[in-house]
Figure 1 (tube, rainbow, N blue to C red):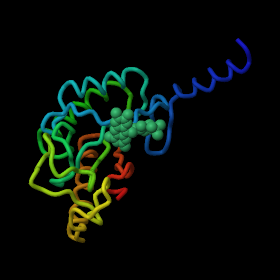
Figure 2 (cartoon, rainbow, N blue to C red; figure 1 turned 45 degrees about the vertical axis):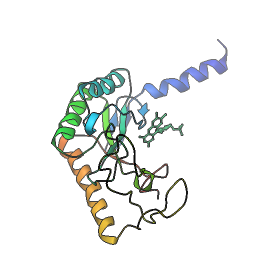
Figure 3 (tube, helix red, strand yellow; figure 1 turned 120 degrees about the horizontal axis):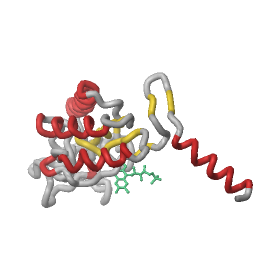
Length: 190
Ligand SMILES: Cc1cc2nc3c(=O)[nH]c(=O)nc-3n(C[C@H](O)[C@H](O)[C@H](O)COP(=O)(O)O)c2cc1C
């Protein structure tokens, strides 16, 4: 093995060392990013979802960011197969995910999500299909045409409160943090 290869292996090994900060310690430096799956019928994470995350936790992931999971605003989600982070059944499902992951030292944080104007007007699994999408400008992210009213100040406050409630629920259940989905053209990005 030449010196360059040895250096590469040493560089990789750092990923398997613990990480410590004032608020968060993880057993390794490997982070699973949020990846939407669509295996939570009616927004409820199943036992299979818990098993999926536990498999990652058992194989040296240090921190799991869950798939995007929806705040309690009726047009947050584009699909009833994506999980919610509100309501008894969904939160009980997430509690099982948490307990499965915490049988290891792995940490876990839900990614809190609202798709805003990226929600379609119709679709097979669209929750609350009678409701239009919401967004700060009401502009459709694909066509760039105005298809909805801009959000009112009251609606913005309602959404902020829904994010806050989800974060408080995550803390109450024992999650190690939260990630706000502020990317990829969804509500916060809009
Ligand atoms: C199947 C799939 C689903 C994803 N779902 C989400 C998601 O729910 N939330 C999110 O922020 N990013 C999502 N992403 C983006 C990944 O988190 C992103 O690809 C990852 O952070 C790696 O970053 P990179 O692609 O810039 O290297 C998804 C990616 C894939 C492949």
